Image (tube, rainbow, N blue to C red; front, side, top):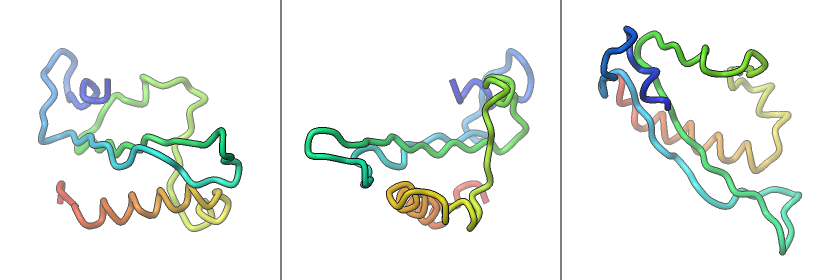
Length: 98
């Protein structure tokens, strides 16, 4: 799905150099709502497009994209904050597109 939105022109083949998709984390997420019988699990992906993409047209209009700023982190539950900070650290060490 995400790879096909990496094309610049309709009908062209997606280029691997303009698109990156990797699973960053998959598994248990620490959360205060977890119990012995029920817990949260998460699958976290990093999807990066180097060029303009039509991906926004594929989602419903009520989907909102957010910039992860300090005020967003303050309001997130601890487990989500930890996962996002780990993801950002991982991305900072790779910088494959720069």
